[in-house]
Image 1 (cartoon, chains in turn yellow, orange):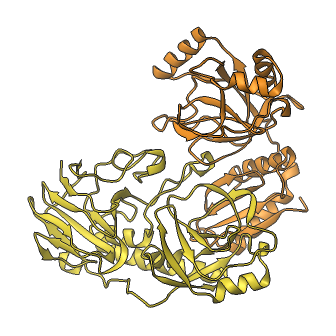
Image 2: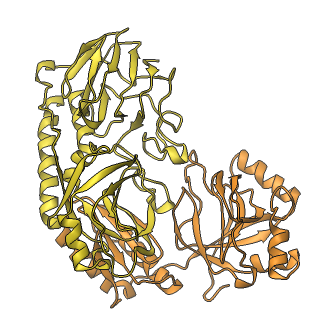
Length: 313
Length: 246
């Protein structure tokens, strides 16, 4: 075994880029809440972008390394330390056998992603290592990490080439109000014009009801034409459901595959890195963009990541 | 196909909506379109999710952008009548009906319907139920077509744990619990067939667009099939559905 969980933190799970191809069978996609940040951590740690990482929520875990390996942490700043000394986020760090990685307190954002060089020794379930807690599959025994759990490394290394170049500028910065860009639809026509205006002009607050399934917001009530129920259809990552009560819920990694509430818009993929860092009390505004523009942003992000990946060539 | 709508569901998927009601003809169109799409040469499709009235198409915008995809999907819709769609498959699912352990609510369902338990079983096993879609949990099927004569309200107090394989009725719906879960359905029997097994090559047995036909078995048959499932796996009987089948 290679790491031992001394303290699991609030919610630490093994996640990769998700379980693709099984939504038609009712299996949630799961996967990291911010695929881009997890991919960056993997690149820094010498891995393929889609390797499984540990996703940590608010209070990060305390992990003892039973053998050396290189790690990289991205996403929100949850205050990582190694044997009590602060270590940087967005940088490859060589950890020695016996050292303890501990997160002190969240400084900014909500979720951090720890990549381990060579990946974690977690079996694939339906093609993915992602934990899907509701169905108790994937990840570490289908559940969040608990004290005493031991996870192996598949191919650990003492160090990597060009360690000094494996540094990026942290991407997440706290803001008084976060902007999430959205593409309207699929059921924007189920709302009155005034309702859509309310959604796009109002400021919404993240409530304590947020988990890996969804993030419930509070704020101005969005008016439907004829209620918030529909015959169930599919749900995308970032879909913004508005039930009849009129306040939005943003659907996330562990969302159900189908649902029967109207969805006014979908957060664009390029902004998932902001979405994943929201926590209770944060304020959000929505800005609509055309789908072509959203895809342009996503492709620009992807080509930047491909350029970064050359460090592992 | 005049009523088909393309709905934006963000920047990596679109929802192709075939109507706004739960009906077998609409579901047949969704199935045909899904089959046509999977056998088409359109690249960049990541996965598709059939539901009651729509097909959600997830795609990779790095391979195909929104506008060209729309063009191709619309083109495919126009050619649907030229594509041969194989008949739906019927899965035959064995059920041990009744009894305190397997079907504790069969008696109540019978009383509620004003029928004998045997009559309820006969009605429940005489229909081919369309699998409109899967959702809620892995392998949970939304079935259509149950005879209203045996419709029964849900339990007033849901059970904390219902074993996987339980066959139930809730209102005019019927279905099988694929995993142990809490629930309020009236339990009329249990199948020894594993609808869902994460470790299997085909983790989930039923597919949207197929039909399920239940048939009654006795305890000996139940034990035999359960033993086969535990060993090398049981192969359910399946056959192409006949036109106008019931």
